[in-house]
Amino acid sequence: MAVTLDQTIAQKQHSFLSRLFSTQTFWVVIAVILACIFLSFATDAFATSKNLYNITRNITFVAIVALGMTFVIITGGIDLSVGSVLCLCSMVLAVTMHAGYSIEIGILATIITALVIGGFNGVLIAYLGFPPFVVTLGMLSIARSLAMVASNNTVVFQFGPDHDKLLALGGGAWVFGIANPVLYMIVLALITGFILRWTKFGRHIFAIGGNEHAATLTGVPVKQIKVAVYMISALSAGIAGIIQTGWLGAVTTNLGTGMELQVIAATVIGGANLAGGVGTAFGAIVGAALIEVIRNSLGLLGINAFWQGVFIGGAILMAVLFDRIRNFRRSD
Amino acid sequence: MRAATWNQAGGKAWGGYRLVAVLELTNISKHFGAIQAVNDVSLSIEPGQVVGLMGDNGAGKSTLVKMIAGNFHASHGTMRMDGKELILNKPAEARQHGIEIVHQDLALCNNLTAAANVYLGRELRRGVGPFRILDYAAMYKRAGQLFAELKSETRPRDLVKQMSGGQRQAVAIARTMLSQAKIVLMDEPTAAISVRQVAEVLNLIRHLRDQGIAVVLISHRMPDVFDVADRVIVMRRGRKVADKTIASSSPEEVTGLITGAIEQVS
Image 1: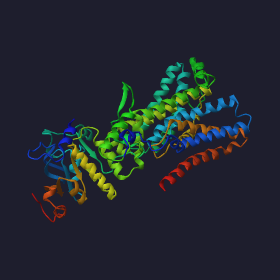
Image 2: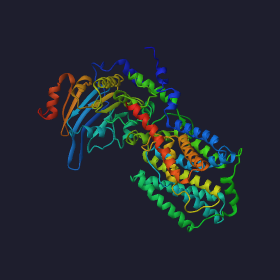
Image 3: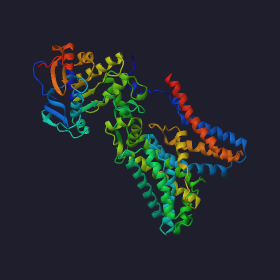
Image 4: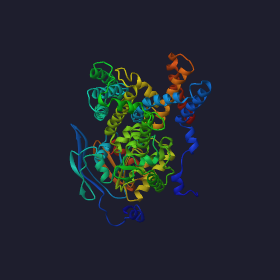
């Protein structure tokens, strides 16, 4: 028995490699890389800087919202309202700026809107015990309706005195020709990863998803944290809305329709578990990337766009299938 | 370090003189509407003592324990800790006073490591002001030391998901040793685990006792109580019907007390 206490403390269950191979995220990364290699050879258009610029930028909107959704999903909840909240936030920004206010005030109003909606969802779920699915389904309807009310269901494409600033914010490429939204996504992903791994708040989010009852008994402020995660989710939708408005240069009331499903698909493909307790920031980005690469490649390969849903749905099932196979092996 | 002095003295080496009770209940009652759950119970628990609390379902054991844990207020009577009156409004206050509970379901998160579970709700952090991050190294180290103290093979970085019942108990018990616990309440710790693991858990209880911590063991299992406890308290229909040393009692007597075949012993 020459095992010292320090050795026991340092003892890890798996080596770095075996841990890497056992994560779903790793295999999705491999899938993305293989798809990219295949597409660079199979088509001339894929590996062009213009196409890569488009792909990376298209990933960001779903990815940013998926980062926020990751918090919610780790606690074992779900937020179906993100697509509509994104639309409402874009509309608040557009309407505020159209009325002649500066971009700072527009963004402030947008962020407050997002936080109020997230807080409303969170309070209903955490303090009144509503099921997350129902609350956010209701908000899905409410937020889109409010966006229509705010704009009288028109398209807003003039953003007042700071019009150009807003377009530069979302459409520019300030650093090394990388699209601005991509930079925002990277920064937000790093912040998300840091919070999940290194803060008490992040630790408690995982605890709630693992065993909410245990978290309550050990003194974790479960209710406050639940409200916070829905606020973060709505905030991420608001931020994506601001960026997307700047990129598109126009806001319509059908912006973000059906986006909640893409976002949830991205987080699940990236390894988050809808039952709670599992999820990473990197996974959310990788999941969003896989969806976008599939979409892009179908176009380039000349496959009818109607097939998109089949491939994306297939990717979701494949990703979860990997997870099931691993669990089967473990339970043997 | 208080714990160290207890250690040297050993669990039961107190001999001639009598200690101040760590916890003393006087004429405690609790009723829910017309239902009298606990009726005029007085008892005292001394440091380093293992007390088996037995009784049939509905005898008032859990209600009594929940009052000590700060979940319920007593309707009548007083609680004293180290001679001072103890009033608890919520479980967190009980914890501050050195009362720790090992819940029947252990309150563990399967998706977290052993160390993370030990520190759940009171994570260690380093850094200054708002820039404070989790101190993984310190938590792994202290958790590892606690498991070593408990003579458990549990490793701090292992996920609780993959642990045996005995190891899970060790994690839940290590949690109670983080702060200077004076009394640990254990709710049915041996109810759902294998025979070999039961022995492991009973050893964990002895380790707590050897550090001068009082343990209240709520259990249905007669052999466990007679194996590890110094005293047994039997409750029936809200009343305390027996409070005697293990040496002066027998499983037959306790069974009789639980079922009511024996009315009461002094």
